[in-house]
Image (cartoon, rainbow, N blue to C red; front, side):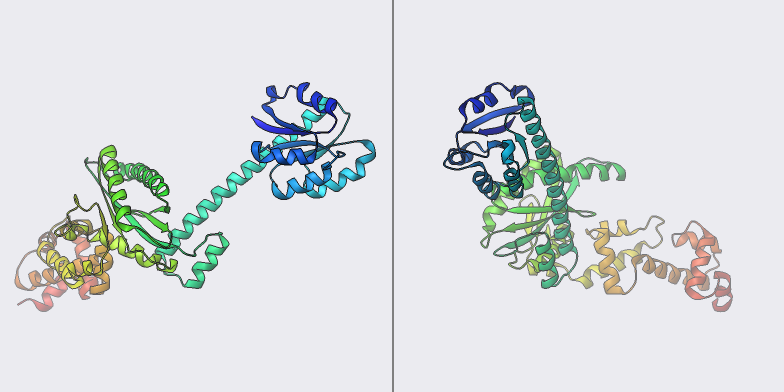
Length: 423
């Protein structure tokens, strides 16, 4: 129901508007009436009408003064002026105060109802526009937090964008959560991708509601493997209480969704440009989770906060060394893949790929080819195996493809290489 207030010092006219118009059948409630602007102002705060129908000429406080005050204090309220013929120019002045429309005072009640319905249409349109603006702003803010997590931005860049989106960055603390899901059921890749979206939404709804109740703002965004969230709190964050609350919520989600759910968390920072650092810390915790499980059991620590010493649990060189050793021992496997290698070292495929290239200077796939070609060269010079037999022994089912790779690597076909180097 839409609430209207009718203001007129003429009791007969006012009562006829209140009682002789079928407001209710049009979804309208006359929430209050008043004999002048002063009385109406006293009632506004209690009933908060969406529409006011008011006369211009009234004692104590006239309609024009009343309209000016209402438009300034309550700009969303729609005002319809009742005016006499001789007040027409006077009524036009009221349009400067955002008056919705005016109606000649002694016109039919249907005319007044029609004016109120037009005001309702304007309210509906403004409400929808406001909803769309809020939705657009919400998406832009979500994009903002994703960008500052995934890209190292300067202080000026971050604050300029925040100002544009009307985001208050002062006296705030920031940390990033990254949620990791493990399914209890066996499912194919497509099923898992689809189901992950469902799980992510359930996690987002539950965690967001709980965080908001506890006084934290939170903004989620989905990554390729993890559901991430930027946490925003006041200048003081009660970390232990927050972790206990989050742990309780994760345990509920695990039961309700039949999943294993863990969260890596970056450290709290007092400046928003360090959200990127907290995000990288949260991701690192998730990527090292299986290694860290030796010290921090998942069942006891579903939420694990990054500490610098965690990176030293196993050095980059040791991890890359493990990858190389595994490839050197399993190069002949036809199904040797990045995913298989990552599984063996208990890390995500993306992380292993990035780590290996950064440390070794080449992609894992190129390293596998290099190892296979080295073994192929040895077999060509020290044995009499045929080309297709050598291809099979180093992990290729297609001898022609092997020959192409070999020539690309050594500059000679396998037969040419053997003729030049056979012992």
